[in-house]
Image (cartoon, rainbow, N blue to C red; front, side, top):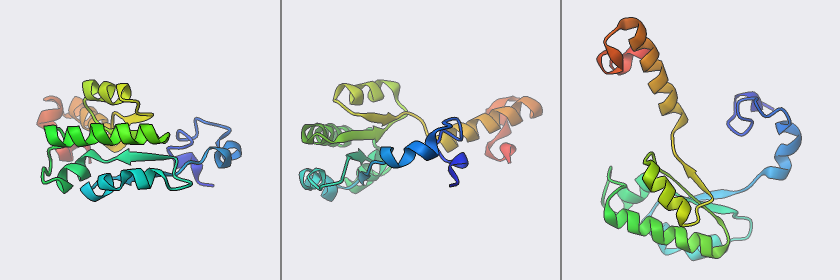
Length: 147
């Protein structure tokens, strides 16, 4: 009943959330390893799984490219995974802060692409606000200025 502080209710902006939530629940699983991608068809075939989120950072680390989700081999694996998920009839999704890459994922048939991270957006706004009062811009204020 604590939906007021939840993303799903859009932080209370969705006034019918408590009445509608049960009928809108879906199960998404995350595939973030080479092993998961190797078993992706079987994962997609599990009854009750509505979609698969491919975690680019986790996958990159699993592939030996820690901190480099944009590496061509990682991107090729993500694209292949998206095709497999879409072909299975399940919802496909991932995360990127690169608008061009987000559009590419949507072209591949992704149902959902996270294009920002809420806490990072919040932190950026807090740093900017602090910098506006301290002076010198967000960069000069540093990460602790918002705290």
